[in-house]
Length: 402
Image (cartoon, rainbow, N blue to C red):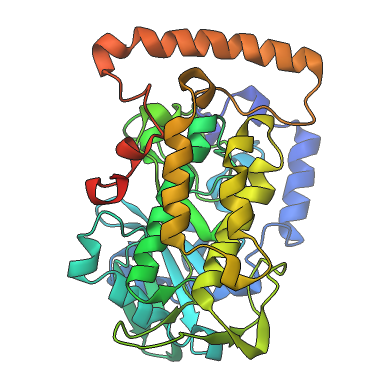
């Protein structure tokens, strides 16, 4: 194995510095610029325990770690062990079979006390077999012998939408259909998420890249080994599946419960929900409808010109009076109706920002023409799967798309 200092193929000259720059990096390293943060030290201390359970942390979190760039002229930013973890309670790890997972610490607190029970319920054999189940699968759960006030849970490592954004109209339709269907599944099984927005919705991005290519868990635009990330495939050529994560605020009701099912609490990312209250009970299922509808309204439909056909769906979901909002099942039916009616080429067009200037608009529209032509050239090989991507019959299980 070639040492990093001598590996100019992996670390070319532009990743390296002059003697003065190297001295500056070394000084900052000695001053603690790249030292483990307080929350990272906790993960380092339990690394041997996690390894015994089959979870290997990155070199940065191994006992006795020393920065790999010391003694080289390579900039620390291009070395994996210069990158920490942004979320104190979530750690990336590699299983012994090579798969990347997330290990989350759930403390024994009031608002997270039922999270493990809900995760285990949604990951039960019967519910996991349902294709509508878009709760992130629970792979493992365990306690640490010296940290009793909580539990560690393990999930597949998923990606967020920030480095891999939606780019086409049918991308948005696909994500909406999947998440509406997934929320419908949760509600049908007595679970209200209560925070189903933005960073609580993630996706399995692996099919957007060639086999073996994996994103770095914390460095956008880089692969797991800190190389340049290749351009992703369009979602219509892949199989991106969206999942709900983080059930810390969720509530579960017995399916035999008769009458209104109510909850209290004002936590969550979306503080625009009218009925949120720590003392006045509200319907958590209608709360979910508002939160999910408002996410798509504010992050997509209000920002792009060619998503207006979806506005009636989300405006109904975000009515101030919960009693006037549809159930998620009704919202899903409305969404299926409007996505079936949208004309072909417009449904596959790029997202057009409302603040886009005219020159850029013309350029990217011309580009979209060529992309559309290319999709049609693939029909003899791929059939109409890519052309009809984002339609209900392509996205949903047969029982949901009918």
